[in-house]
Structures are given as C-alpha cells and as structure tokens.
Length: 361
Ligand SMILES: NC(=O)c1ccc[n+]([C@@H]2O[C@H](COP(=O)([O-])OP(=O)(O)OC[C@H]3O[C@@H](n4cnc5c(N)ncnc54)[C@H](O)[C@@H]3O)[C@@H](O)[C@H]2O)c1
Image (tube, rainbow, N blue to C red; front, side, top):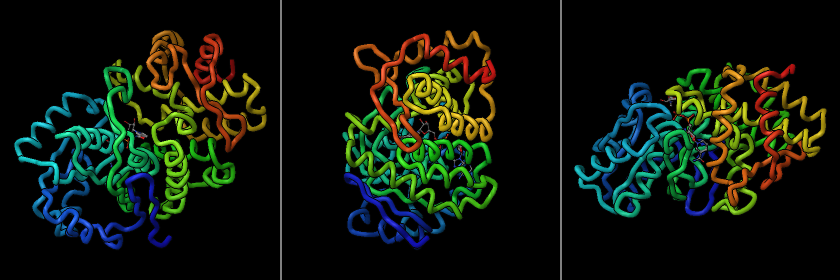
C-alpha cells in the first residue's frame, strides 16, 4: 500500500513507514522545532524498539524518555501522578510535545496525561500494537481505569498526529495480534459485511506488515464514525459493540489481580452480545452462527466459574453508556449493521453469560 492519510477533527493519521511518512521532518518543522520532546512508553516497547526509534530520528536525539511498567493494571491514577511529576521536573510547558510510543495502555494513559498537564499539551501517537493501531490510538478517547471499572476517568483529546507503521507489529506476541484482530472483527460486524468476510481469511501467523490495507480499512471505519459523532452522543456508541460485557469481564479480571488481553474480553463480549441480538430477534440464526463459529474458532474459551457471573454482572452497572441507571447495549441487526441504546432484560444478560461459558447448554 502506498502511504495514505486520513483526518478527523484536529488529527491527521498517516499510514506506512515512519521515515517515509516524514516523521523526522514534522518534528523538526516550525510547529515542533522548539518543543521539548517527551516519549512515554512501556518497558517492553522500550527494550524492543527504543534504540531504533531514537537513532532513526534526529529530532528525538535529545528527547526525554518516560518508561512505565506494562499492562492494563498500570492504566491508573498513581502512574499518572508519577508522570505528571516527571514532566514538572523536566520543566515541560505548554509548547512542548508528548509522543506516546506503545500499545493502547500507553496511548490512553499518555493522551490523558498530555491533555490534563498544564491544561493540555500537544501529543502524537505512535501505536505499536495491532489493537492500538486499528482502534485505541485513534478517535480522541483518553483515560484511565478506576479499580475494576474501565476508562472511568478521562477526557476527549485529539492527538495532533497518529503514525501507523506496521513494522512495529513484527515483534508482537501472537496473543496480542489476536487481541487487535478482535477490534477489526468488530469494525466489520458493526459497519461493513464485506470487510468482515475478508477478515475471516486473514492468517494471523502471516507477516503483519502485509496487513496495512486492513489496518487502514479498520481505521477508516472508525474515523468515519468518530467524525460524525465525536462525543458519542449517537452512532459512535456502535463502536462499543462487545464492550459492555467485554469491559465487565476485563474489570472482573482486574479485580482479581489478573489481566487478559483487551481483545479477548471484546471477543467474548461480542459472542454474548450477538447471542442477545439473536434472542431479541434482531440478528438471524445463520448470521449468529457465522459469528459464533468465527469467534469460537479464533479465541480460547472464557475460563471462569459459573458462579463468577454474579460478580461480573454488577460491573455492568458502571458502563459509561448507561442512561438513568439502565444498562444500554449496542447490538447487531445484521452483519455489517449495529443498533445502539438497546435495553436488555436481566434474565437475558445472565443467559448470555451462561452461553459464553457453556455453549452447548
Ligand atoms: N481509546 C480508545 O478508543 C480505545 C479503544 C480500544 C481499546 N482501548 C484501550 O487499549 C488498551 C489495550 O491496548 P493494547 O492491547 O495495545 O494493550 P497494551 O498497551 O497493554 O499492549 C499489550 C502488550 O503488548 C506489549 N507491546 C506493545 N507494543 C509491542 C510491540 N511492538 N512488540 C511487542 N510487544 C509490544 C505491551 O508492552 C503490552 O505488554 C486497553 O486499556 C483498552 O481499554 C482504547
């Protein structure tokens, strides 16, 4: 794929090799030439890519690097305080620039830190996981978790630029590729049946650098939706398909000091919410079975005891889409089309959890 660009709100998204995409020239341009550069990253990305990153771009030679422990359990206020303090020590001001170099935890957290420090610094995202390239780094949602509740504290803030370079995916463990692939499947399910069919044939053991067209396609779906409804008053809620139940499962793991890949939780959430869509006669049986087979073939089974459902369900009550205390779902009415603000009765929610745990029951 040739170099491509998309824009939404204040952001420009560039796809392709970072060097060919003018990363260095941008950082040396009048807009950023005088800015101190601070790179926020995690330890894994630091070990794998930081030397290459810094040495490839002259404009980064003097950059300060803030290295954080990896993982969702670190997307929390304590870590923000640590980073805000470091920014103070470096005497970072309004004209300086944060570069978030990492997965979705880093782009969510780093974006939030940038947006809140001194009432807002500019930031650029260079996402390094499939999940952050197809989803988390784009769209302006930044934030952190609060105990078991995902993304409870945050602000909408747009990166000036997002640079999507699939080269970084070559070091991603298979489990993280599967995780990002779940968000791509979601994009197909909510908005593009043809893309969903194409995605089903992706071989996740092939070189991810060859997936840039699909990554672009996913981002284009998200970009169109967030451009129409940036603040999630209406159809942006469609992007939450799989996430109402997915976030509750992820929260349950966080509460029990265990972490699962975000995309696994989304995959299980999509199974449960497709089941609900079927039972509410929105989705037909054939399409439901197609989704069920695809997800079950690609993802491991959710391994929690049936008794855990009673602990997971209350976590739904803090979902950000809820209105007047009522849980609000995004469901599918067919493959390629979603419908938001759907109320679902409590018994059906329990049935959906039982279905993902015991498909044969
Ligand atoms: N803001 C949004 O719109 C949005 C959308 C979807 C998901 N999210 C958030 O994104 C987060 C999940 O993102 P994620 O899956 O990228 O998690 P992550 O940032 O924790 O990355 C997953 C793992 O991959 C490692 N890693 C990162 N880049 C690597 C590379 N190139 N090679 C090898 N290892 C690498 C990380 O160190 C980490 O261990 C969740 O917190 C989720 O809530 C946000």
